[in-house]
Length: 424
Image 1 (cartoon, helix red, strand yellow):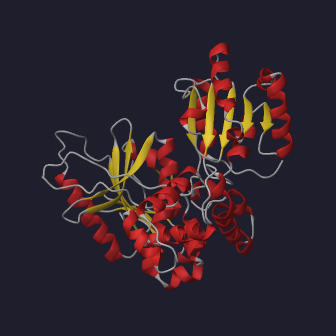
Image 2 (cartoon, rainbow, N blue to C red):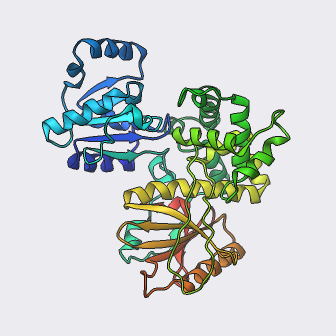
Image 3 (cartoon, rainbow, N blue to C red):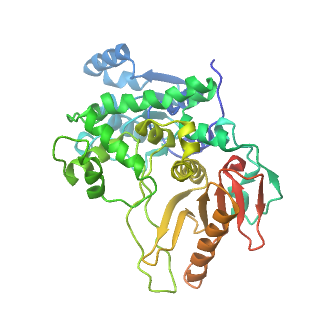
């Protein structure tokens, strides 16, 4: 068996299988869904292989119930190639009445509602996988646990082992599992290959809609230039007009963006709407992000040296790296990520909000005393206007940095933690 690195999703999958008849694992291609599922599955049907797919289609005409037979949990890889399997599994889960029967994996979202009879609610649980976090790939020492901080824990002074050279490489390499086993030069090729595949092939196959690879690349290029910002589709239209010979509308941009979301390439961040003592107007637009920062660098055709030579741009890409990791950790903590921005210009890069009502205010900076002080002021300003009579106080506040010798706690209680020290 090939080498395998622990995934946070491993334990999440076992937990979900213990409570539901089936679990759907979805996420971008090449993120490790099948590898993770096969470690737990007792039998498999690999529909991503042409020969298996054709044989299965033949079997459906003769004895459809046969494809469900096998040791459980039974894995259906790339299940969306035969959308009817969804309803078959949902019905079989009802018939058997036991948890842990099936695992489904897919690299595009559920088919349109009219292709399935039932949503699967109550029978099929969903697990979203992304590329690997730095803790999973082995670059984070994991000395600072977000879960422990939510439980009221503290941290000692903890050394950070990564410098800017390492961080810029990790941004461009991304969290593609295969890349974590390769030499640096070969590792950087993985994101480029993914970018080529989604713009040349997958953007047309995801929902059988004819789209232009050139236009797809222009849209991703513009998205990469606007990382972490609340830019409307109109801004993206204007951004690409100089490179697109044809007129392009907001609706066209939205169509491409929606397709990339179905492929799990783009993952925007919604806004946070807390209870405040002030009458400040909260900006509600989503922040623009990629599922993995390496897609953004591939879209712009830049590498680690380019990031080191432009630290302002590097900060944007680093923010996407941290958002990726925090989303993975938040899933494990039963939480989600949001951003905050109001009409007075007060911002908070991320708010990790758990279902139990706990939340943390988190700013993201490359590092340096000036930037850390700036981030601390933003956090303290936001914390001061939260109406704690109507909602909880933040469980903790944190500034996540790229560089810096240590993770530590400031006198004002804010944690300063390099990304290479974090784990869920």
